[in-house]
Image (tube, rainbow over all chains, first blue to last red; front, side, top):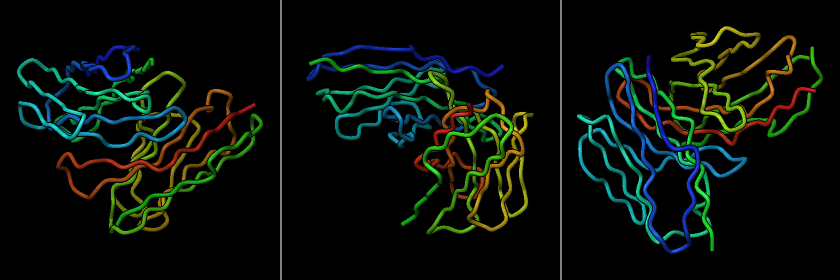
Length: 109
Length: 114
């Protein structure tokens, strides 16, 4: 079967750095997405990785290792507005999106 | 630029009543369209997707149905709602073709079946 694993919940302090991990087992791989979803709102696109390595975009970076079936989202200089759920999703060999359950990130002052 | 809208934003419906959620996309042609459901604390569940007018693929057997009467319009319906249909429904779109395109979501619709 196809599976995306990410921690259910994480807590971090304002101004700090947090890394949210995502591991996947899918039938094929055609890219990995990270989305941010604030409570009660729709997910919004953060990043897309299809090649190994780190993609940096402001305070957010996303890393991919295809050989390990592993990705992480790195958030720097955390702000209170970063409190949200972060969804990992993998595009499989049929170009279907397989979604993780999301990681709820709680930022404390 | 492309935009996606869905409505209504929230609704409370009694068990056994019908449902209609609408979604429209602007600024693009022949998009792939999707309906997802997100139960509390759970991941996104793909319900239906469409690659063109009148072309609907169902991912999960249930009492819901979808229709695409126009290129940029996608409708989610039910004839008789169940309590288990409660959840957050999201319409989404991406560019046509299969290339790992970014998917964009509408604002979402909260459905509570009572």
